[in-house]
Image (cartoon, rainbow, N blue to C red; front, side, top):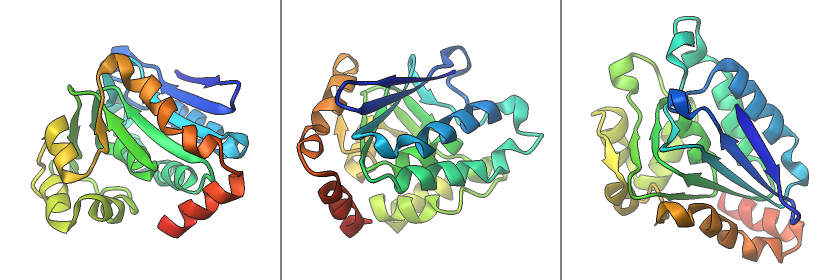
Length: 203
């Protein structure tokens, strides 16, 4: 339920492909995502997206009681994404909820479609966020706005997410993937150690 398309220019397009379940992530899918990311050091760029109208609803509810919501694999996945030397782009085709936040916060650039919604209902659900997520969220949108999301449970639409700085661009759905590829053009023309060096200065 995770598809990987490797383009000729070594850009890897990773797609969460479970639209009938709002792209909710099972333990098997998380393991598959992690395995792909851990092998992605040869990629020249990463585009992470979803199939259908939702990027991901987070953890598969059928596995929450068995401990999926608090599994360390979420943090391991986001850390692996963050440590990649190439540029990573979250091309958000729709709503992002819960545990899926870790992945998009770990990406270098986030773009979304106008219908996207963003919420991280850890207060309501009774779980702590992934360890690195609050700091990354604060770095992006500031402490007050991060508390609106994590403490007050505020749901953001795409316009507010853009104003807050959570996403960098709002793109029409038909242009989402092509725009993601365009945003990789500069790094594709640079030496890999130059790309990783600039990323290290900002991370």
